[in-house]
Amino acid sequence: MAAALIAAQTAPARADFGDALVGGVVGGVVGGVIVNEANKKKQRTYVAPQVSSSQRAANAEVQTALNYFGYPAGTPDGVLGSRSRSAISQYQVTLGYSPTGYLTEYERSHLVSSYHRAVAGGPATMQAAAANPMGMRGLLVTWRDEAMGIAPTAAPAAAPVAAAQPETTTATAPSTGLPTFLDAAGAQVSLASFCNRVGLMTTTNGGYTTVADMTNPMEALGEQLCLTRAYAIAQGEELAARVPGTTPEQIAQQCAGFGPAMKAELSDLSLSPAPAVLEKVRGFAVGTGMPPAQLSSTAKICLSVGYRDDAMDVATASALLLAGLGETAYAELLGHHLSQGFGANQRSDLAFDWYGIALEGAERPGTAVFAPGQPERMQLLRKAAYAMVGREDDAAAAPVPAALPSFQVPESSN
Figure (cartoon, rainbow, N blue to C red):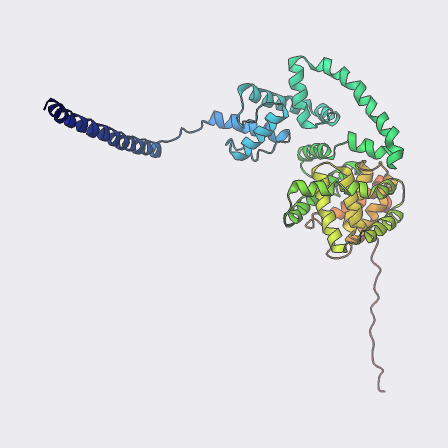
């Protein structure tokens, strides 16, 4: 009976405990839901603070500096969106910092102060960027190291290594059959950096050189090289996007074979007249066994890759193949490479022949590839090419032969 009484007394207690437990759990869940709903309502009604005009101006200054050093942040509107964050991450990677997309106070200060230093430096800044392997971006690293006091000790140590590299290239050149100057040009000259500087100067001068105001033919031809380079990159990227089952990395790896495959033709470009080089290129094209249309699209894709990746052998070989296939507009690129010394030895005399091929082809309707909306561009190209070789008086286009009228009058019946 005692046991029964104990059991009878404890049962309600357990039941009460269970009810309390269930009630506590249910109450906790419901309470949590209520709290969450309340928080949601708070979040819905939360109004983000407005960015002050001073903060927006500071953000715009950051965007301007990023664009200046080659990190595409878009229009400097003071709003640091995804594009600006991506540009900030690239800047941080250059300096070896964590790519968070958000600037620390030091990172921001270094970026903005470097921008003002570069602008104030004028031509000296351009010269420093030209001498730096990383171009404009390399100045950020150099000036950071200078501020830390490590630049004076780093420079002497690097000099012997840099001096030893050309000797190694020269020694191995006979085994590959490639001229030494091609290796030196690819290792020391960056077309991307060159075009960055040209873009800055073009903006400073208020636009591209025109036929009326051209005074320096080499500067005008340099501008046209960078303009056609931009068109070639865009055209090739559009074609590459239609290639099924391949990634950009795979396409770049396959295009890397263009230079070695056409090493003989690349060598001849810097040594032989254009007709002889074209004859050799046509033989190469026939030997591939590929249809001309497939060769053309492949070369255009690899031309884009070569320019984008600053691989001058790939870009030059692709332009050579296109010119050999009869697409004479691409002969202009070969003239630019020879006149400016990218991917080939600097030879104004040989460059003139390639410009002539491009100009002759441009007279045929529908052959414009680069800036088709600017027909006066070819007039500038003609004037600059002739001035380059000291033949300014011959720059005028050949006159169109006069066509004599011809009427047939029937004889009089009288």
